[in-house]
Image (tube, rainbow, N blue to C red; front, top):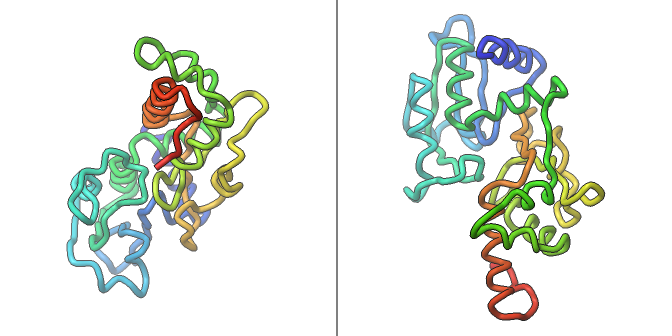
Length: 229
């Protein structure tokens, strides 16, 4: 599988892909000692002077991705909170693949499966109906409530850079999300580079947890669903 992903990544690069999430990667020149250079997309090009740290191993991505600019832990790796000011120089395509997988675990493989028509998406109803115990209450959420939650939790500008593929049920896509959020060809960071999409094929644990909070508060107050913060 690793060899397949390496070949797939090389094919993407040959087709002009230069970004994944907030990470931009560019091939090195023949006279340079590295094959690929990575940095935050906001530090690329004319903003390269902002770079103050250099890294040379794919494992360094784990350190870079751990905390945001303020030093706070990043529990969601696809959040648009990757810190700036760093550059990484890697020796070959295998190291590039490893680094991208450290920044965005398993998501290159998810895109590979999607391109091979092997990616199964699960709608929200399928996911919440699997919940048990303390999360069983989530199955009671309405389509309208789920739609409102998606607009808050999935926002690319402030919450998550994934492209939403899942629907609420068989006939209902999240209507309050912009159409670009549902389009894998759209760069969710709004940068100019062609980007490998971070595909979201079912609602995440964060969505389930927030849904539970929503339904518990609604149940306790016995009023209309609370406004999102």
